[in-house]
Length: 71
Image (cartoon, rainbow, N blue to C red):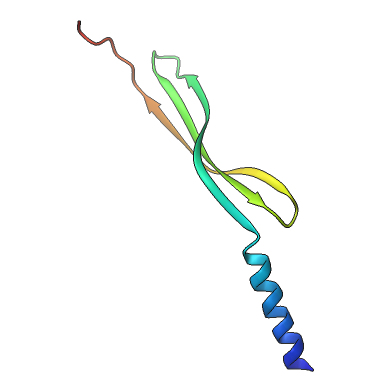
């Protein structure tokens, strides 16, 4: 009986581990940095199927400096 319970516990653990997935990164925000440049925020999107939620994770910010190109 103990082996059966251990096998069921292992099977449910494996099943629950595969219930979330990630996609991205996606641009979630672009804003001015106040000095003539841009700040771009990119985040991964995580879907948790066990509780049916979508949330942002692993966000990064990148600063871009804009300049006038000679014509």
